Length: 637
Image (cartoon, rainbow, N blue to C red):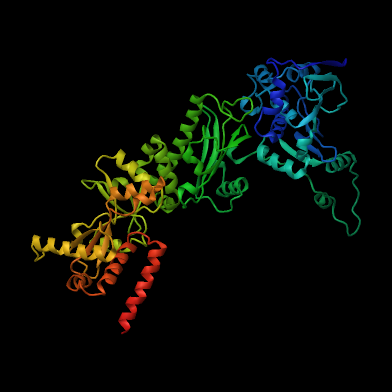
């Protein structure tokens, strides 16, 4: 062919500097673009071979090679794909944004499956100019009689194209890295990037240093001479095994591409370990496998997530036809699903030119809704058909389910009958169980240890409560109250019910009022709390001297104020100190109100009540311990 010079045909003025600097937010993405282009070329040629239009030579492996030369600061990308003629280079390279994959699909639309072609993005090749001052292409088309082509461009819009020297069908792209991008010629960096973006491409990918490549070429060119092994030598096959063959960086048959029936439990666990470097076994998983109305495949894993929901971080990896796009793209993955770990491959996703942002919100919403539905179906199915397993997982997965219900009304509607509550005996009940009949009030515990005194009272009275120990439970129960008319949640220390009171009292209403006023004055003076609310009750348990109650409304208001940094304004003024008139200590305080020991006893009774209600401050705890020691000293006298 004649040597040709020219300027790249660009449809928008000054687009090349934009491509060079801003086409992609992450400059390392050029690895993904050039390798995926090479995989496309190999995949297309395989298709043509399947249609009888081409035959691969026996000694040609269908692959992509990446060769690093750290000293020369170059990167070479070699593929054994279909290559290009001079006219195709002119069309696909010199005219920026023309899509080779689109043209290929149009030509063979009745003979091939477009899901197998990664390309159709157009500008991927030009990502090379983000990191290279000079780029060359050596290519030879598979077409009969084609001549090799050499193309070169040094970062402007001018290029040269001439006859090349390539002997093998395929394409070699060489990048001469600029000073800011020399790190990409380092083996550890290249391996890291290829593993990130290209781990599951459909063609084998090999990485070599210059020395390794030269050695591999030398070994490939040497004829193997079969000889009888001498005494003491290993057999020929064993000798071959000693040679270390290069290992492909791409798993060309990832687990999500298989049918769920063909995957074993161990394969799912091994894939999880491999992709997420997490050696704690996942609880269970969902294999997504949809062909219509859009193509979507993937695996979502439920890891152990029994910590507070707001400190959790999962990873959902999004692929487009096995090409890694990004982690946790919120337009596709519902926010609450990001507590999980998994991979989703959706070739139909509409991507922009850089493959890093999504378009067409309507389609994306359908994808998101489908994923949400499949997760809900899995969970409700497990609750109905595998209740024992579901209960076993509940403590780990409930933050995720509650977060999903808060974030997504459709998810809540599907899950509402599969939401479980653990009672004081460790048994699980559904929301419907708790609210059947006229029962609309649900008592709950947030801290079994701290609220142990209240739990004891409930058990003795034959009353039930559920355990809601995580941060997400507070907004979750508020949501349940809003969606279910008449339902109310109250913490176990919100009030003293009639079940705890002793039946029949000989005191008149006036006597009870006088007793309350007298004890209120004594405790307010002793504690230095003029606004302290005191209530006197005759409780069944005479050993219980005092307890604290705080209405559910007041406590939620305090929590909200603390959340917004207004903690000092939420300081416990709504607490009620409930004194047990049947308790000997309370009776002693009233009968000996002038005693110098009474203030100390009042403080001790108050702190004992508060310990079962909420943590004491460090200063309060220090004073409580000191006072307890003082009281013990009195007992020794």
